[in-house]
Length: 373
Ligand SMILES: Nc1ncnc2c1ncn2[C@@H]1O[C@H](COP(=O)(O)OP(=O)(O)OP(=O)(O)O)[C@@H](O)[C@H]1O
Image (cartoon, rainbow, N blue to C red; front, side, top):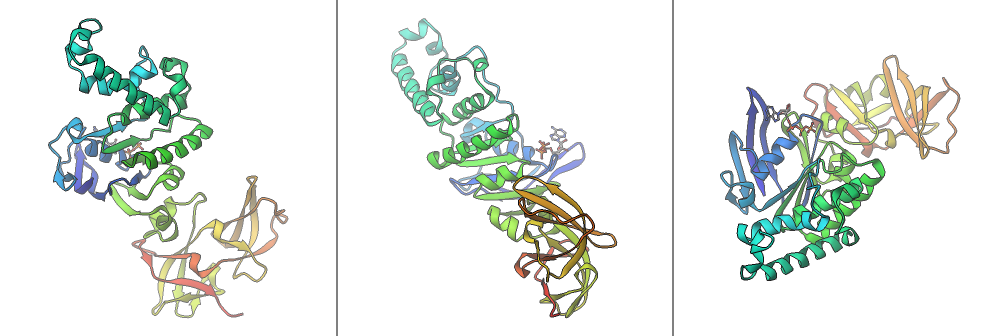
């Protein structure tokens, strides 16, 4: 499935500002971004629930903008899973198939049985429900009503109901956001496994980067109606193409420090460093992830400890390295932080330094290393 330069406005505000996106067959693609960046609108356009003002939606190379959701053979699971409360799990899951494969007459309780082929079709549907239930570990729950299920179980039923039609593309809009943290982790693993088993294309909308990063083949990071970067999760984390992408991706917020660089010499907090790859002086923003900074008595960054936040597995240390500059570094949780205000030094590897243009924010092919003492 592919979007080409899709634009969409609501009441004079352009919400999608030229989205181009290729979802390779069988891939798990996430649309990641903050609230309001246009993720759901993009998904609704893919599903055929909304139309772009301009641009194209293609499936297998064919324009499908005029086709309904059903004609596109796309299934969608939303945040609120809207199961029918009066139907059992089995009936909820069978519903898309009964609607598609049985006529209105055939669906009638008594009359339907008189219609030739009804029983056979019903049996085939039951078999598919049983297979889907086995895949989602719902077999023991088939006779229950949604009210008798936990949130995670209801979510699995909703996924099963959407997948049973064997859609070619499966769209999920924040499907885990109503679940508690532990269940979300469990469902993440289940969705990944399901994706592998079904081999279908999944497009997953979330504002939670852990979900996007842990499940996806490719992540499209959306910011303000545009795709800021698209690629494998590792590429977004290791090689963010802009300051905005660097700031969004990562468990701990990346340190971003404005610095003036001249060939052979950096300034301010980085005065003990030397630029790599610089030919003319320029002002940049240095990005260093807290997890890539380590305590090092000979490290080039020097500061005073102004905070230590113990998180169990790790401790986040905050150092004041210049008048207005604080830098966070992650230390293992079993390291006892020194007393407040202690002088400390931090080191880093050149391959972990991100350098961005101070004005436009784009990534520059530069780095920093420790200058010789
Ligand atoms: N039908 C509509 N009419 C008017 N404005 C809309 C409509 N649908 C979406 N918008 C606006 O478009 C913008 C993008 O909305 P969208 O739901 O796509 O964002 P999102 O990234 O999915 O956000 P969230 O994570 O909060 O769901 C928002 O400012 C929203 O208010």
